[in-house]
Length: 315
Image (cartoon, rainbow, N blue to C red; front, side, top):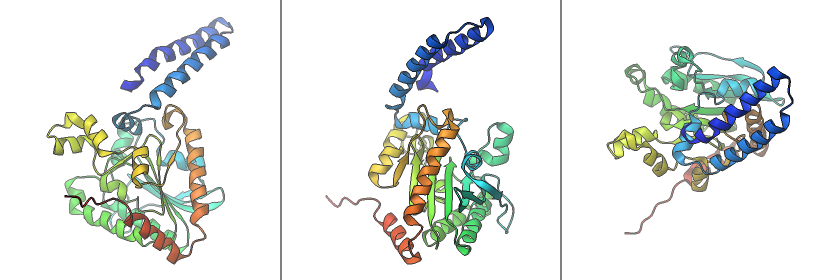
């Protein structure tokens, strides 16, 4: 990424030393270790001062772990379920039943692709109405069998195509918001990458809402905001800062409950550690809410969202 350019030279040197050490059978471990320490110092300096726009870049990193990566790392006996039982299956949203440390969950999340072919198949993680209806079907399944719901949010937004609108995109999202608000089972939501617009919020009405440290969550993409407000999409960097879309900003505003720490340099640098951190936070949250009665659960969920935002009545 642009702001990581100073890392390039040191990473090249480390790889060259490793190759030279292997080829010549010379022990250069001390020199390599010194460079690794220097690399870590640079990473700390870079990542402790990221702007909102730079965090957008990290959230969109193509090697960042996606929903199926987390499922592979932390979920046992996962059984994926397909289709909305109305029209078709939408690969942009995946979901099913599995166990996390022996606790059975219904897990639902946006899924992007790793290359052009898989991204076309997954529609770049932008769901159609049938994707949100599939998610709702699985939530209702969880409610019926008294299973908690875990949603993993990672989308630029709901798909804005003509067919999606014809099939009721707005209604599908609105229905998810309404149904999740009254769902009679615990819901935990985690923004794992890019949480964009109603497409993200359709999986985000939950008892506990978390964000990964370098993820973003906003009502619109910075590019879209800049095009509308400033009439210039090139001012996306300014829009990102104005939107207050980073995890630390949203925690201060009370939009999310907590931040899940990422490995140094971002989740894309260590999938295993990131999955472990996410699992720990999810299980802690579930422990806090699993014994609440249905009435307590719904009341607290209602209060959580009602207290968001402030009104300034000064003239």
